[in-house]
Length: 168
Image (cartoon, rainbow, N blue to C red):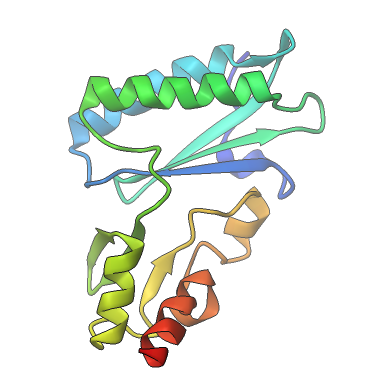
């Protein structure tokens, strides 16, 4: 089934965000996207083709969306997606499926640190509630469109790091 564009997905479309552990080169980005497009074109759930799309941002964030109004992603189809991402991690030499680290902006740079390290940075005043973070736990395309993906840390679950830091 041909891919749809990410912009054409409804706001209710289910979303997965995969964050690379480093910015990918143009060649690695192209390779990743060709492979992802190939997978999404044949992606099915209970033999029904899924209406899927992807988006690639900052050479580091892969968004996969599925319009579940016609056919929903099943547990097995989600497992297949994760297996494909893990295969691509090995092929390209990048980590994508690790949802633990915090990604945030420091100037024009996107940094990736453990949650514990982010809390340490908060405690040391190296990041603030105004530091922009990426919330890769969002579950719908509408969340991204509504501006909930990249926000000040104090407006997201990341803000707990500042509460913990003030308690120390």
